[in-house]
Image (cartoon, rainbow, N blue to C red; front, side):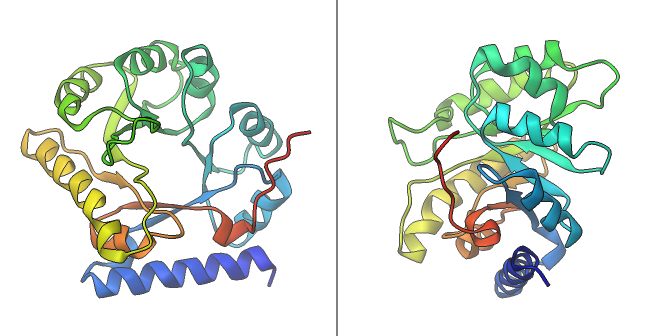
Amino acid sequence: MSTIAANLQAVESQIVAAATRAGRAPGSVRLLAVSKTFGADAVLEAYAAGQRAFGENYLQEALDKIAALAGRGIEWHFIGPIQSNKTRPIAAHFDWVHTVDRLKIAQRLSEQRPPDLAPLNICLQVNVSGEATKSGCAPEELADLAAACAALPNLRLRGLMAIPEPEADYDKQRAPLARLRALYEQLNAQGYGVDTLSMGMSADLAAAVAEGATIVRVGSAIFGARSYAKG
């Protein structure tokens, strides 16, 4: 078994254990393998071990991998910040976008989604920690953004995403995740029928699962330490 395959197995076991502790069905939590900065060969190793959903932050790097691995049924998720001049290739090549935080971006993705493709699955990114440096709409802006995005053609509003401020303490990890879950529940109470909470990474996976995450985004625990040097 390759190192990546063994790491995937270990992460899946962590998800099962966290779900069991939370009284949830293990199958209710999907693993998104975050492959940013790793090449197509690493993605192929994970694919060979059964992983099908991959998250990418850097557009050009992602497009190269998508082209190299076409025809394999891989589900590609864009999870990085979105510049308005980069929406067209994102709309054309990804199945999911987790980082929609303003209407302008949603409108461009809707307009630029090719008509022969299924609607683009989107999550609205919420700044639940209130950090000035973090992307995401403010919680008080979410209701208006959700209403506008849900009305756009060629998009399917699936849920919410957050990247909380890192915390080492488990209870402190849970607090912002609980805020996101409460916002998610408010959307469903308003009839949106969302089904996705994209939250939790390697360090706060257990807390995220306890608070209802349906997608956890894990990278280095699968692929190893990242090198950010760009050639």
